[in-house]
Figure 1: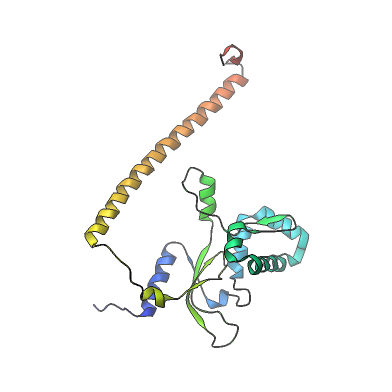
Figure 2: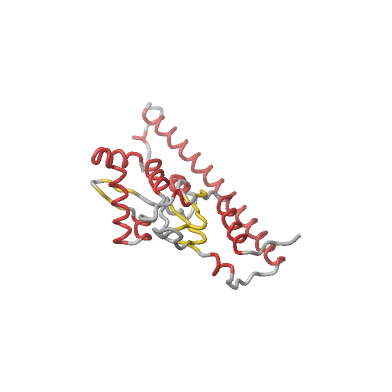
Length: 221
């Protein structure tokens, strides 16, 4: 069987992998060349994750809320840069909008991890980014919440030299990591179970104190 080693096949493999991990496959029709945004995904993230802030914003701007939102977002990116806005979000009329939820260092705070899972990642292939017919294209563009101000060309990736260990070493590394992460996962479950028991004991103790079943006045500090 002949392996397709063309650049397009490599590009399609990257896209297929990204989509399999949760990325949204988008097209040129979803992309706004003037703003370098995917407006639909950008707005969807805000409305889905920050409903209270969005309603406050709407009360101020009414029917112009969406237009004002994009104006403030684009203006912020132009002045401070994409990375800054993704990290810090932006403020307007007393509303603070987050554009990205960073991945927490661990799963101890489940709320933070759930926030991270709500991030919207997407990929567009053969993006026509110039505001003219038959303009230049980017092979791949990866977006975070529809913010698409950075692209990837598959040519330098395909022609890069990457050192890869022998298969038996890769297998040994993978097996070691599987065992190590399995132990960590088990430890986390044990700790989470203990925390749950402590919370239950705390609630029971409070109940006994409130109902008078336990007299804390006689307890030694």
